[in-house]
Image (cartoon, rainbow, N blue to C red; front, side, top):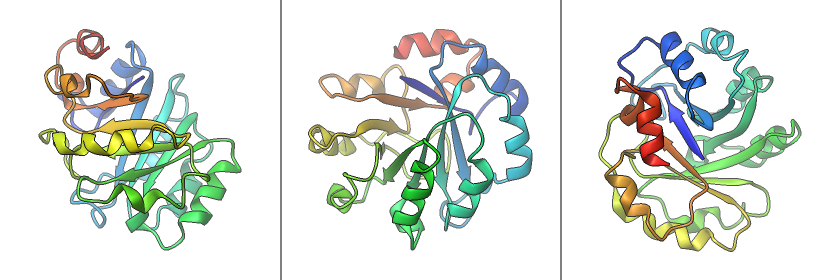
Amino acid sequence: MIAVSFLKSKYERGETLQKIMASDADLIHVDLLDGIYAGENNLQIDELVKELANTEKKLDIHLMVKEPLEYIKQLINLNIWAITFHLDATSNPKEIIEYVKSHNIKVGIAINPDEDIHILDKYFDLIHYVLIMSVYPGKGGQEFIPDVLEKIPYLYDKNVLIGIDGGINNNTIKYLDGYQVDNIVSGSFICMSDDFNKQINLLK
């Protein structure tokens, strides 16, 4: 799958969302930042919920916020494929996991480039998805970090879907040759272009 992030775009957010919805993207990737966990703050949560209320494409929500459960409660009725959060952003990961699963939505954990993959060991039986971050959370347009790919094979027998997020374009995607990945998140490569479908299909 290709999930398109609208964090960095040459168009305003409403127009960007319309372009993604009209494209060949599989998912709309929603990056939420509170300015505390990661450097930027784009959390106009009420406004965002309204903008995403009628999306036909499923939403792939990535929370880069401290104590994400309250945000999740505001988002939970949207058309969501998965909600992903960071372990070091919360004191109650199991409560978050159970809450999301109780709404029949996939739950994921994101792992940053400098985090040990083994921090996930006690969660594999509880979650559906692991998002490998190939940049540091916060800003769109960062350069891809190839070393994170070493974490992917460890996940193959863990019965989880595997995603990768950050710095993915038509050149860096070549690093993924030979790896099994279910969801590729790409943002500025698509949303800073004039032709979303051209970029999406280059990745596919």
